[in-house]
Amino acid sequence: MIRVGVVTFPGSLDDQDAARAVRLVGFEPVPLWHASDSLDAVDAVILPGGFSYGDYLRCGAIARFSPVMTSVIDAAGKGMPVLGICNGFQVLCESHLLPGALIRNDCRTFVCRDQRLRVENTETAWTSRFTPGQEIVIVFKNGEGSFMADDDTLAMLEGEGRVVFRYLEVNPNGSRNDIAGITNARGNVVGLMPHPEHNVDALTGPSLDGLPFFAGLADWLARV
Image (cartoon, rainbow, N blue to C red; front, side):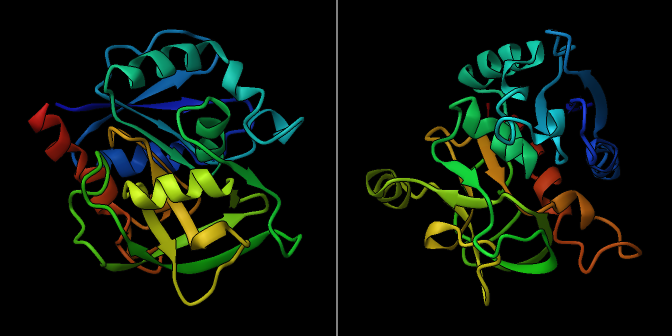
């Protein structure tokens, strides 16, 4: 069975939601504690949403130095799939596993909404169950989710097809180029601000569009 580690930092809020999503697609969720450097022989890792270390200093800046992140960074460099959701995306950027930075929303308020996205890249570890150009609806909730990068970095991301998701209809936080999620060059590391783990049950979400994020992991692991 595929084992997916879900990291809990002090202040994580969505770790249990991520673990439930993993379970719903038939995989085994494995809790990973921030203070341990063990990944417990997992096949992939999810960095969940929340407010790690209270978002002090910068969102994700302290979590980046947790012992578990040393192991995550090493494993990601060797090809292990890693998904960073919201605060997890911030941690990935602080860890330099992904370029750019997430700053305060341009509206200067916390935004919570059902957000339309367009899938731009289906060649990553987490997006193979989508089709290019597919439009999906995913829960969005953050106060510091505006993706920023310099012009050269943006040109690189766009030119290499590393923008994975883009906001549609409205840009909720001022992200450059309407970017909602990106990947590394290899495609095994993906970060996004919306929350697919909240779109896995018709009772609690506006769609089931979150399920392919997690189910598609099997496709990637079958190829490596």
